Structure formats: structure tokens, C-alpha cells
Image (cartoon, rainbow, N blue to C red; front, side, top):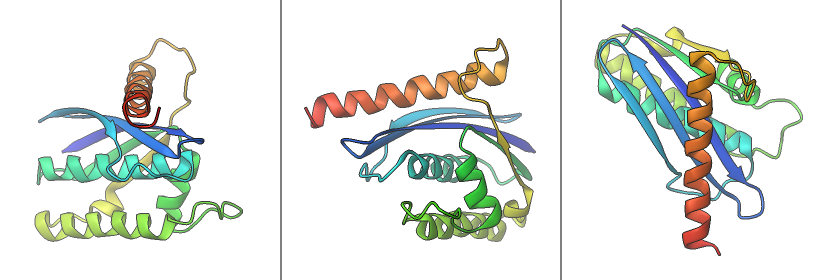
Length: 163
């Protein structure tokens, strides 16, 4: 079964907090989730995007053992680079947690392979989505939904906890 994950994250540079939203679609299920990160202290928006993808993949793979291919749509080129090349992007040393996040991603893929027999890491395709391109397409609608929910979660958290 093919599964499509759409992700977006928000980050507030002053408060160093982040939130995420994702929308997952497959033939068997649909998941829509938005929240603040459990550990909301984030250094930058790239870190938020990476953690969003990890959370979405973890929750999606728990949903079914019959997933054989995953398409991840994200507007973060940095996140795509980190996962596809399994390393930190050159010149982006401000993101010190890349190694820990890549390890978590690899662990999720390894656990899924052991549980289902499918090497999901080799079956994941990342696609760059143009953020806020204002086109009337389903992909843009879902990206905008994720963006709006992530920002909503972020500002609710800031208003309740940090102001």
C-alpha cells in the first residue's frame, strides 16, 4: 500500500518553540494531527521541519503493517537533504541535533522493517512542495491546512505559556 504524508512545521525564533501538523492519506486510513512538540525548545525552523517528518512517519507506520511505499511532501529542502543524504547540510552547523534526528529516523525505519518485513527506508520518496504558491490544487490545500494548523498550535502555546 502507498501512503502519502504531507507535513509542515512552525517555529518562533524568539521563544525557541515549535509546532507541527501533518495530513496522511492511504487507501486504508487518513490521519490529521497538529500539536506542539513535546520538547518545544527548538533552535530553528529546519529542526522543526525534521522533527515533524519524524513524528508523522512514526505515527503513520504504527497505523498499518501493509505500507510498502511512503511519499513525504514537505516544503523544507533542508529536511529532504538531511534524510536523503543521511548527513548534515554543509554550512548549516546551527542545526546541532541533525545526528540525533537522523538516528531516530533510521531507528523507525529499522523497527518497521523488522515488524513488517518491508525495508521502508528504501521505499520513502521525498517531494519538495512549493509553500504558499496560492494555486488551487489538492496538494496546495493540504499544505496550507498543515501550515495553518501548525501556526495555530504555536500561537496557542505561546499565549498560554510564554506571555
